[in-house]
Length: 211
Figure 1 (cartoon, rainbow, N blue to C red):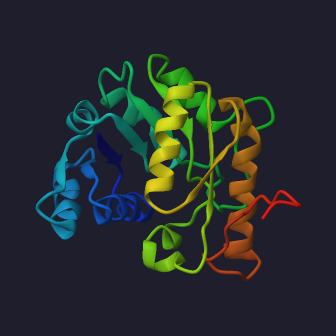
Figure 2: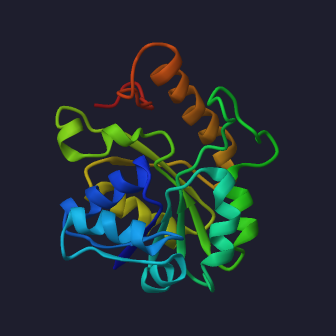
């Protein structure tokens, strides 16, 4: 299984580093291939890099590590995504990070599925700060990743990947539940950056009476 990480910002770099750290097969994609190559060089010779279409073509699972506003252009540049598993980690937030741009009747994940109707979109990792992705940053805690999708096989593949990199995968139901998961991501941003917690905040769902 090869994983493409599209984007070289904080989340893209942290995800690519995490997957590389646990010896997964990674290719980094960027509209400027030189940017992807620069990040790949930092991670080691085993990490590949290229343009967006090339990275998506090589991969089984594609992570969109991008601002939501950049997704449409990237999907257009990605070529044929038929059958690909696309992991949407975005939160459709405003420029000041204080509110969501869409919600209630749709979500970023559902908009992405509409833009890539032949792909299998999975919502995941939108409630995890980049600073908490490295294994070293969470040695004392098992953090939860909420995973939502309309495709059971794609959801299972991403859930297995979540577990492989040391998180607890939580089945969050169909893709439409992203309408609820994305506000959790926004609330986490408020805890992290507006309420003084710093980027060490992460939501956890607890079932009482279970160990």
